[in-house]
Length: 284
Ligand SMILES: C[S@@+](CC[C@H](N)C(=O)[O-])C[C@H]1O[C@@H](n2cnc3c(N)ncnc32)[C@H](O)[C@@H]1O
Ligand SMILES: [Zn+2]
Image (cartoon, helix red, strand yellow):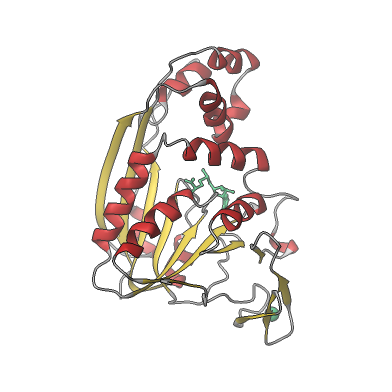
């Protein structure tokens, strides 16, 4: 079994190692974190929560899960899997963190590809939303799914070979801490035309997304070693997919009832997917 589960988790309260013991994780100082029946572990201390139910809501997570499962973003998942496989060479064991993993769809596609080369994989899916970590744990038992924040990642320093941050919230200082020297950050952000057809239905004036800047990542982590724009047009979306797509984006809360209704009736709408894929390598 190439997936293994001895990840480098640390106690969020005192940063000492965590060990599995009778359905929970314990640190040397006696803090105990239960493994939920769905398999995820809550490592987000109450004092680090900025709201009662941080991150994506249950509805957003469910919508994204169904939308991604319907295959609309499959070309992006496949490209990411290829790029990651090419970028990682010659390592027989890999520690992988998805920082903001959602329901784990991309993490599964990417690690399934890495697994084909018979590598031993130790995979952690982290999300601040308990709904996301729960969805990830229920579906992908081969991962360690945790509720935590990118602001304070409960993993040992220099423990990861690969960090993924896909449409997420990068905290480069933390990615720098948990990556081994030479380790890679694969980051995906919306490109200028991402979902432009959806945004046209919602906003009177549609601004192009700004191209993401690489400055901060390069300063805090290391050089940009790869950049590619991936653009494709989705198949026509059915009514469920249009509803799910709107619900899983931040545009949902900004859409007026009229715009939501217009989208419901927009049979055959197809959307542009425009993603900027970048890889940064941690300097030694
Ligand atoms: C746009 S979704 C992307 C999810 C997944 N990467 C994907 O592409 O399907 C952003 C995710 O980041 C999570 N998130 C937001 N703030 C976070 C933080 N500070 N630390 C970790 N995850 C966070 C949200 O709960 C949500 O699941
Ligand atoms: Zn502790």
